[in-house]
Image (cartoon, helix red, strand yellow):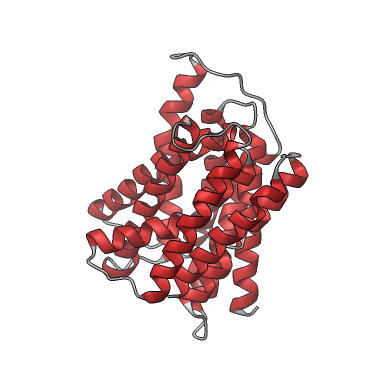
Amino acid sequence: MSWVVLSLVSALFLGFYDLSKKHAVHANAVLPVLFLSTVFGAVVWVVLMGAATWTPLPLPAILRVEPLTLAQHGQMLLKSVIVSGSWILTYFAFKHLPMSIAAPIRATGPLWTLFGAILVLGERPNGWELLGIGTTLVSFLGLSLAGRREGIHFHRDKWVGFLIGGTLLGAVSGLYDKYLFGHAGFAAGTVQAWFSIYLVVLFLPLAIGWKRRWWPRAEFHWRWSIPFIGWFLLVADFAYFTALRDEEALVSLVSSMRRGSTLVAFAGGLWLFRERGGWAKVLAVLGVVAGIVLTIAG
């Protein structure tokens, strides 16, 4: 399968991941959804690790999980801490915001990663990246104006703040990924497997606290979309990493095409959740996607 097709497959399943997340947390308790969806994703890696250890089954290189030292486990735990904070904020935001607002905001992650690279790593944006940043910010303003018609004021809405906070933490995770893959030399499967497992460990106390009613909380309802959150994300990441292994693949193009997930989530929000005001947001959403593509392609 070509890297172009794999990139589009990744975008499709990343959009499905967002839609499953919205379906699972809508009018539902967030923490049990977070815990259970993470468990379903981690179980896949535990099975693969068990198969590699106890059976002669040969696994593709991308699915192999390397043994780690204690210090390396600490690095994986730090990755999980960052991601868990991002997901907690994002899941609560997805529960309360329309998908047609949440998905484009979440898609601005690469923009914040670039800002972080500029501030922390000393990188300097080129002309295309500056154009992408400007396009994204103008489109973000347009999205804010469209949201105001639905009573969502970006500058004082708590859930928009949650989503931006989660997206910023996601950008921090992206910068940390650059260190893990570039400087520390970890394989993608190793990082994905262990941070998934450590996420279960981190979310377990929260799930127990929710179960024992340590704080006022919403009721939980089982939904078929919960396991698909973890599975869709695994497929999206697997397709993404496999695409990057192709010698002819261009990282900028793979990442840009992956941003097509925003269009999948946006369209799905209008169709599945009957969200209103969709046409008023179309140009802003397309602008956000175009800005991210310009930023990555630059």
